Length: 452
Ligand code: NDP
Image 1 (cartoon, rainbow, N blue to C red):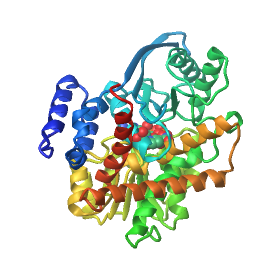
Image 2 (image 1 turned 90 degrees about the vertical axis):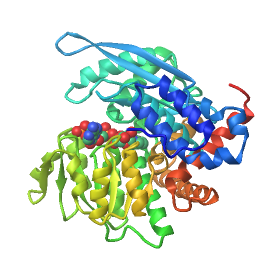
Image 3 (image 1 turned 180 degrees about the horizontal axis):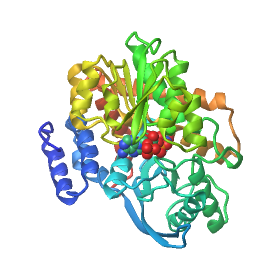
């Protein structure tokens, strides 16, 4: 349930009230906007230009929303139809950039919340990228490669008119991995007759960047590590719980291990596994990336591990650090309290908006470390930005070069969030710091560019 109780500024309240009327059926979008506006109170109070130029009223409105029909033929010859979306949210600091999500829960509210978050996240990376997001309610799970290809070709047949290397550069997200990006890229090239860096997350043989696959999970751990070290701690010897077992979760597990901690629980949407000896990410990679099987299969490899049906119980597993890497609103107030009661000292978000407002209040009240998604999971899009640079240069950098740049960017994001929070009187509040630091650059560019 959304509440405007904590926003006091009359201008911010009027923007939010207006948006609630216009977007009454978009709860995820309103949740994401409210979370940002709460942090911006001292910023708006400090500089009257944001109200005079109605920057907040403009920043919550996408520049363009495209919604389209995606017809395709399944293996039995039946004609199926899905809904496609691209929300081009803000291009003040660069071409729109943000992933595509293929999942049955996708709707306009979900894509708008993701696009809105992306604006601030991309700004935090310091790279010249605006914010956008897209996707479809198509579910790749259980579909044959042929069906996925036909769907992707139909989706791109429409999307290609709205994107381009200097206009809008989509990437992957839930349900859109290497296979889907390949099919989408192939269709774009075929229709437009150009080989350009129009999508990121491409395969290494056709313009992809080394370390892009690992980037979001690795980046999440670099961010968490920077926070722990800044507070005289480290990952060494810690127990970590990670939700999800997709792209972000798998590589977060790998980096957690490299940093001297172990991951004792992971999940998919059916259930979770617990392995007190540490979940082996190589086994997980085989299960998820090669076999495309359920996480329960882990028990065939490690019979001493435990499997529990239902995914939300994972937050009752005692741990030092939690890395939610599955989906939005997966940690509610109750789960957050269970984590804290069991000794959790930090939550760093790999997924987008995985914590409900009640969960975030619980973290802040308990004073545990909280790394919000738009800062902590920015490593994926940052490395997509590096892929765009390599494509423009017609060069490819080594894994070590990209990884080193990623680490530097994540440490820089942590420092920027911590500094912004301190400057506006909220020392240690990385959520407020991320929103403020992300906002200032975009808002400044909007001020320079006039009313548009
Ligand atoms: P994947 O599709 O690779 O994996 C998603 C994982 O989350 C799967 O294990 C999936 O389980 C699980 N999951 C999905 N929906 C639910 C649900 N409703 N309840 C419980 N579990 C669920 O996606 P990614 O790893 O790429 O993305 C995960 C999160 O990270 C998303 O929030 C995404 O927006 C965010 N993110 C991803 C980036 C990237 O580079 N990939 C960049 C920044 C953020 P199952 O297989 O059972 O569906």
